Image (cartoon, rainbow, N blue to C red; front, side, top):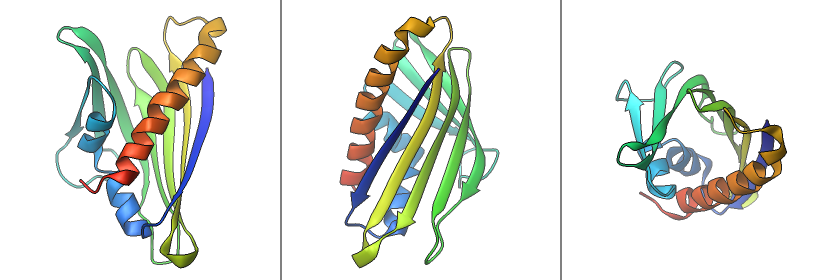
Length: 147
């Protein structure tokens, strides 16, 4: 099982950062060979399922994640979204947090616990490094593009 944490501070107001982070289809555009759908369609809430399908044609896997905590930010308070990974291949959870900062800046914290079924524990360091790279690039993309 792999744990990692990513942090960024951006010169954007917290509501805009929250909107960019929780616009789930944009995650698909930020991760190669991935498409994201949301069930049910509409505003995210506790119980919403976000399904990331990664692969090429019939070769791939679905990574369904259920929103188990949904606390959009307030004027002066943080935001938190927790997703529980419920797939056959990828298990664990992810948390996205936003925190208001000085000068209209926002601090983002992305924490994740990740386990890939059938991947032996000795592969954890490689999985951690690959995950930090892929999700770090995705986070940078989500924060840099208005979409």
